[in-house]
Length: 343
Ligand SMILES: Cc1cc2nc3c(=O)[nH]c(=O)nc-3n(C[C@H](O)[C@H](O)[C@H](O)COP(=O)(O)OP(=O)(O)OC[C@H]3O[C@@H](n4cnc5c(N)ncnc54)[C@H](O)[C@@H]3O)c2cc1C
Image (cartoon, rainbow, N blue to C red; front, side):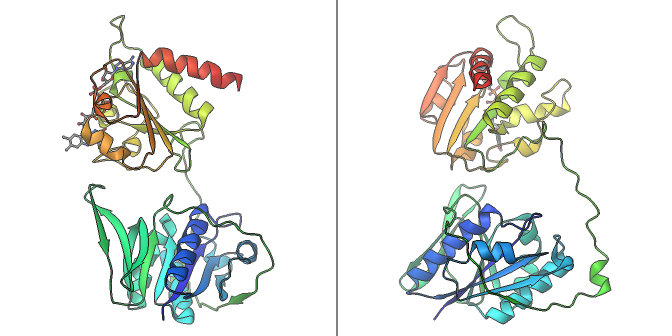
């Protein structure tokens, strides 16, 4: 009989990230599909009681935790030791965890220490013919594979946005604390600060309801024969701040960063497509973008797609968008910003 361990780590304020609740839902439905497999939870963080309390009603058999100052921050050595201890205590056949930079760093090593195997970027789990099967994408999201393994424990790291987050009443959870001894050699690595972009330049928002894509047209000569890059910057920034959208870009626009005047807050991290990212948002709006296949392949997981282009024969018109507005994006976005400002 399979036994599932859900792993989660707390955030700075002691709460669990959304991905943890999504992975919990994945674990619960897998447990049900396996005919009522036992589910345990393993928490890591400085203080975990509030996180455990938020899961009190999920029906887990036990909640184990490794906590304390040594486990406040992401650090390979302490996190790998914590995960190894939690797995040895719970003795699961299947370990489920959300994708986060913290887990992505430590779980492969921890899986090795537990003589386990690991699959990352899981986008689906099911039980078929009595076997657990997982789904993940390869070759820049162009090929989807379904795989299963006989080896246990099997670590499954779930991508965000795939499962609905679990929702349940908070309560008072009983937590079994586990001791993990950390040596001074491990403490040599310390987090001494966090450097992050200013709030006006933090443009990638994975949880946003809307993906706003800016294409190279914003940095091209417009109908008056002139470039309007500063105006474009203002329109794009006002739009993503007013709508709380996440900012994506075509490759052509981000590549221009090496060629002089550009949209200053755009980097290759914003690039969507075959050689960029494949974000997951319920809706997407492309502007001044042609909608070529290497770009739109990155829209694979965007449910509702709209585009604004001057070109009525652009790629979006060839079945890539649900709605194409043949219009000047400078004018449309200026009007949209006016409406957003009114609230
Ligand atoms: C191996 C390979 C990998 C690639 N990977 C990627 C990738 O990951 N991501 C990616 O994006 N591309 C990728 N590309 C490049 C891709 O093929 C396109 O060249 C790129 O997406 C074009 O970007 P664009 O549509 O913004 O620019 P353009 O093709 O220059 O289109 C600009 C559009 O803006 C419109 N426009 C101009 N002004 C306005 C206005 N005022 N209002 C409205 N519309 C306006 C124009 O009509 C035009 O349609 C890849 C290519 C290759 C060969």
